[in-house]
Image 1 (tube, rainbow, N blue to C red):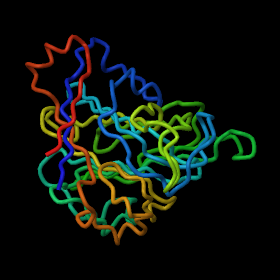
Image 2: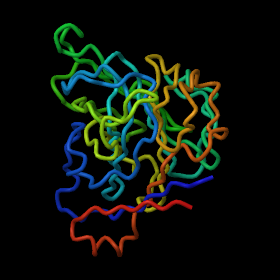
Image 3: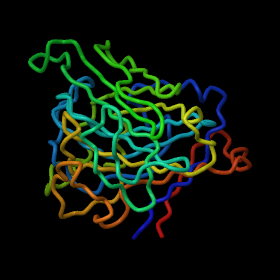
Length: 294
């Protein structure tokens, strides 16, 4: 198997903790994407440039940034505003689940087996729908967040009707989790079998997350493994769009309980490794990343 590892040099910027969670400007806020998609979407290619509406779902690229134990993730692409789900799964501490089971409000993920060496510590599920554009909803743009900390608490973390790109804020075992979407993207991948609309690695709008990983047990220096995928509206049907290496012959993955990523070539996650603290001093405020494959 090929391992996807990313070593990032943390930015030494005084106002780093003040990053706005709005789903936009990933290149400016994070630097270059650390991973990009190689396969087309099986959940529709979004062609609507409106930031509050998407008629398709795709994962184009991944942006990651850590400031101390504050963890920021930009999942570039689109999440169809029909209440499809984006699941984000993190492995950053000892323990966890390799096969998901019994997570509050995430029961339809039961039986999903992650890749070898990936033991989920936190599983999050974000959805949005009922956008304000004419003909696509009543105007009350709705966002909802569920999540679980393995061995801890979880369930419904918050949601409702939000104005514009106001971030949704929830709490998981005392940790703040914030998320917001921006669906301006009409580039990146196309539908399965069609040429890409543009380079997925350059898409820099989508679903943005802030997670207080320190409160959830991250030490700020250990590797963080990141998995994720687009799922159906009941977390019940995995699409082709996942983070990590993909089987080019795979269409939908289907029911989560029947998915075993250990049977898919490569690794279905990306590893983020913060640079040692001594290297931060050399960064001069820049965010650098390099990809290593072995």
